[in-house]
Structures are given as structure tokens and as C-alpha cells.
Image 1: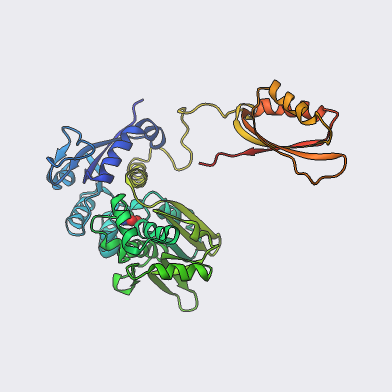
Image 2: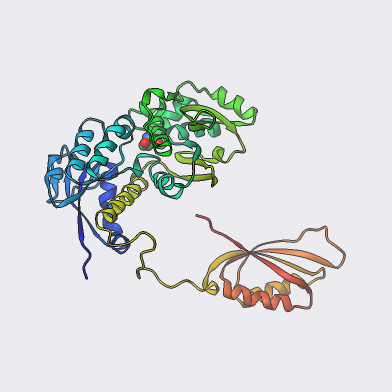
Length: 433
Ligand code: HSE
């Protein structure tokens, strides 16, 4: 049985728009299995089709008129990735009023005009999905909206601007001046050519406003948010902070004051203890710590920008909208057969740490090495501490990649050697990616 096709109108084909198109194609099969729908981008609206692009516009789908997306009765989801707050507002409003679900990654639009747009969405019984609007590829919106739904959110503290985090990291680790770090961020393509909203804190503020509004169910007006950027941070502040045991980060902070019920929302460069987990968030990465009254602290970490991470969030929203529009798959676990069986542990390959307690006499190490050699297990390094008891010594071997089944057989044999006492200790060296 073929899956129902779900037509999507994509507005904007910049970095993220192209990523959405590319990655829906890449994972088409998986998305079909998981959503129960064939996701089809059937129209793409761009301002200038002739503009040179890294990823060519797909032929036959292009229009220069945003209304073509709204007026197409076959399109049930409109994805707004054009940016700005005027044309984008008109598009989202018209799409909702035409009975379409909307997906947007536009943080400024939601922070400034979200209250109006969500009222229109409610009046028309159509959803707005906006995972990509906050922290790129990190699934923070769905986490707060769904996974933490049973919690009063007590606070949200986040590093939510990658450009500023990159600049501050380079100032901290390489001793660069603010100007040099910014120039580096621009040359690497992290900062926009006009990075004003990044460095003056407003990109982070838009995200904080969305998170605060989501967490507390009321729109936080932009003019009630205190916003400072990182322009005035000097290398000497970074150095003094380090001397005092702190790291400087641009933080978005949302704090519930339980006594008064008021909500504090601010973005400021702030000192945090060097040993705090947020201090280890470096470069362009983002991280958000959400504290709930039931769950306690949770931490979300990942790429806050970039074509693939951000398109991952947009695609998740499209999938949500698709399942909402045609609930062919219930929430939960969609079964399919795209992957193989669960790997038996015997076939799982890694490097290992092996500690053997063996008699301290000539030839012992050679006997252990011989057993490993017979099983074709390579030795990466060996340590034998000099201080040990008179008769037995610990020998620590780091072993090369081998299947666990083979290692286990070798270990059995090593354990049977008369020069070995106690069971050897084997630990896996995990390749954490
Ligand atoms: N320019 C932002 C950042 C990404 O540097 O994190 C998009 O909001």
C-alpha cells in the first residue's frame, strides 16, 4: 500500500531551506516509515530564482510568489524560512487562515509577533511548529513542550548564540582580542557578515523570549527583557575571571520567582564557575539547562546553527505537522525494517584495557602476550608499576580493536595461566563520537 503524499510549500531556499530539501530527499525512506506519509516539497518560493546558489533550485517547483503556496489547495504545510518580520508575518497569517499547518525557524518573527500569530493559529485550529527557531539542531522546544509538560519550569539557563560563544572561547583559550576573535568567526562563516544581532545579544534574546513564553504560557514582551551583548568584554576581563575561577559566557537566563510568580528574562555576559558544566561548552556549540520542579536539572547540548542541524529541526516539525494533518501513525514507536538485527555482543569491536595480576618473574609478560598473539589481538601499550608486592605485579595492557567474543576467549586462557591470580579485569575503551 503506498503512503499518502503530503504536499509542502517551502518559502525560502537559502542555507536552511536548501538543507531541508536535501535532507528530506536523503532520508526519504526513513521519513516515510516513521511518519506514514510521503513528504513532498511541491512548491518553492524564492525572491530571485536566478541567484547563484550552492545547491541548485529543483526544476519545475519554483515560484516567485509567496501567495502561490497559500493558494495551492493541495499544499497542507507551509514552511517559512524567508526571515524578516513583515513578509514572513503575512505569509504565516495567510497560511494559517487558509487551513495550513505552519513550520517556521524565524525567531525574530515569533519573539516580536508570536502573540498575534498564535492567536490566529488558535482561531483557525492550525498549529505553528518552531523547533528550528531556538538553538538550531537542539530539540529544546519539543523537550519543554512535551517531555517536561508535567513540570513547573523553575529556570532555563542557556548558551544560545554560537557566534558569541565562539568569540568568547577564542578570547579565553587563545588570548585573542574581541576584534580578532570576531574577525575569525566571520572568516569561518560562523558570524553573519553583519553580526550585529549576534554580538549585541538580540539573537539570544529572541530565543530566550520564545523559551520563556513557552515555559510560562504568556508572551514576554521584548521591552521587558534586559539585553546586553559581548561588545565591551575585553581580554583582561576574561583573564581576571579565569584568575578568580570563572569563565565568561553570554547567557540567556529565564528565572521564575516563585514568591511573586514573576518571570525574569535577560541576556548578559556573565561569570560562571570554571568547573560548571556550561563552562565546558565551547566554540559554536549551544547548551541549555532547564530546571523543572519534578525532573530537576536537564541539559541539552548541540549545534545551535548550520544547515544540517537546523534543517534537522525543520524536518522534525514537518514530520509533526504531517502526522497531525494525517494521523496515520500514532505517537510512539513506528515499526519498520530499515535496519538489521541487534548485534550480538561477541561481534562488537573495540579497544580494551586489560589488567592482569601475575607473578613477578621473567617470562610472565611473554606468556600473556603469546596468548593474545594466538588470538591475533594487538597490544597498544603495556604498563607495569614498579611498586608492587613481592610476588605479584599488576600488568596493564591496552589492546587494539578486537571483537569482544575473541577477547573473551583470550581472557579465559589468560585467566587459566598458572602465573596469573584473580580474574583479569577487562574494560572497554569506548570511541565516544
Ligand atoms: N547566528 C546564530 C548564532 C544562529 O550564532 O548562534 C542563528 O540564530
